[in-house]
Length: 415
Image 1: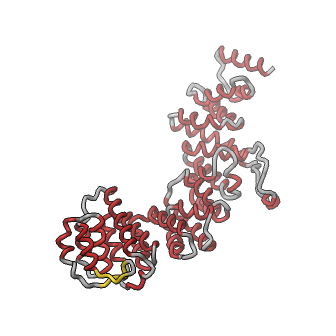
Image 2 (image 1 turned 60 degrees about the vertical axis):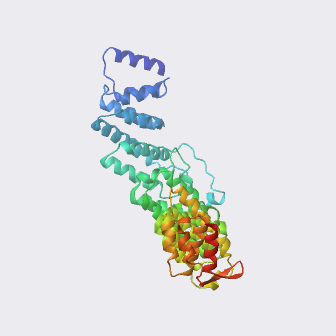
Image 3 (image 1 turned 120 degrees about the vertical axis):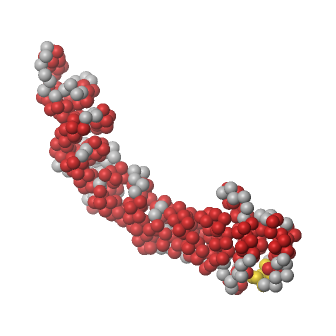
């Protein structure tokens, strides 16, 4: 009977009758019906009420994949507005259903598993997202309100419902959406996963900073046992908000060396040259490997200038180096300098090292001598030869009392 009705409608249109919105209903179940309805929605030859009804039917029939290409095909602003406004009537009706799965306490105790079913609200949420780029005025405001409301609760569940995630929706939800995202990160047991979901769809620095504040609070509460998803989230956050905790963890002897190294990388990514103060403090206050790894970070963020920045940060008290092999540590540091300078296409470090040799601080002169020796900076040989009688004592070198003059003789012999 439906097939006969479709044939009769087609025949009536062929003899000049104008299509009406109600004529579209029989195409819901007809073969190729959705394609016909989509074509009518796009067609400028159809009356506007027919085009609007076509869009509404596609929404009702869950044909959301048609929305983006359909709207992109409409070039007239007034027509696009009429179609979006018409679609919003259907979206509002579906949104009112509020029939999406919910996480009550009983469900959470059972592991959070729910039956999704055919939710009108989920469809309305997805449709609103797809229409947002094409909406304006009141329709756009209403879409953003719907999306903000959607991500305001049960985020771990709702990010899995329908064709769009919470992270995708966030950029279109305004201040309320950001507040919801922050709340989600506070409560979730998977902070790295949640943050990744958000970052996939936005690079907004304000959002990064707000999420960073949440991670800072969570890390402080968990310290020093920061591991798993929380550690990964801190590493990937990318904002300055987490830097105070990363610095604290690096200084804590209870935090594993591998974690500290990762946190140093995160600080460099978040702050670049602005992290100079953090790493000079670490060079001056920490001992052993941590001191010298921090010195290498200064080369990474400051380039050639970092040589003296690191050297000048070394403490003057010889006793603080009691547990350090300065021969080995300075060799590793200066080899690192040489490698980095090649990567940065720096042709000479003689000018920096010469200033270091003129320093009044013995650690700075020590580093300059060692780097001149290891990098084979032969243009400084004459100056170094003039330092061979320097009787300034330095921290024990391979367990033996050593002076800067001894290092100068060693460097001169290598040049």
